[in-house]
Amino acid sequence: MSAGSAASLTYTHPTIGGGARKPCSCDEALSSTASAYSDRRCPMNNDALEITYHIRGFRQIVYKPTPEWPDCIFEQDANFDVMLSITERGLTTETDLGSLLMLIDARVRQLVLAWEFQYGRRLQLSRDNIAWPSFPQEVGSNTAAGGIVFGDQAEAQVALAPPPGAMPQMPLGAERWIRTFAEAGDFSGYQEEQLRRYYLIIEELWDTYALRFDPADQAASKRIGLIRHFVSHVECRGQEVVKFISEQLPSSAVSGRNLPTVRFDRLSAEHRNFVGRNVPDSERIARKLIELVLADMSPFA
Image (cartoon, rainbow, N blue to C red; front, top):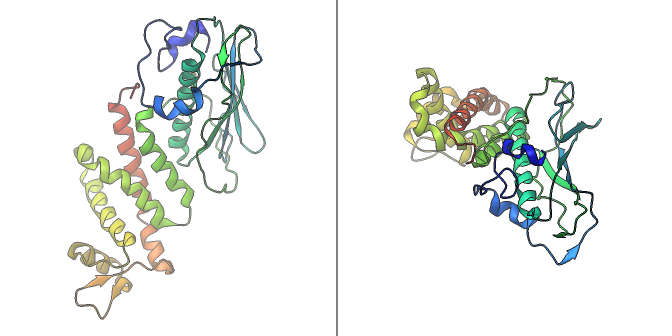
């Protein structure tokens, strides 16, 4: 990402690309890692800022062949970890390095969000190294972005894909939905936890986009909501939930109660399999809802 190509970035830096930088929702989150500079001078590296990021949590080769993005070196090791080295050249003493660092951090976060949505699992991002430019510049000692927790890795999967011509991006405004969606991928084998997370997205976005779904998906959304209620409470007595669940899963009925009651038994394979049959629909609908949001969302969100 050279000084001359900064216009291709999602946000415009005040000294690179011209014009004032548009405020973005990630500024506050990144400020702890890109601001609070001290009055000391660091080792420098000509007129370029070079930043290395480490992304963990992949279970497959991301691209084959390796992408050739401008001013970015992409490497993936035998453990499927990805290293990104990004260089911003042509800087001067007038360059606000703190704001530029925040800008590049946001760019990489958008890339990681795109990967999390693509693969349906959380990834861990860290900023491992910064090589500062050689001209005198007050800089700080921060070298690592906040990590994102991810689950245990499963067996490796091979899913080769050619690299896109440009670095994938997701609006940071969609971060919470995408992270919730990706978190469900951490719970392989725990169907109730996956369905609950997918339904968090469905519940929040459904009213806005319900008319974009066909009658089969309308019915599936309602069914998933009833099942989410079933797996989220020790016992359920709501009339609609009890009627649906007891018809589909008679063994869930609880005797000896004043009102008809159903209970989810996490130790029952029958109960888990019943929930598991509805996970694919919940994942598909949640993904489509996020895609609809993304289509309506400004890239600056």
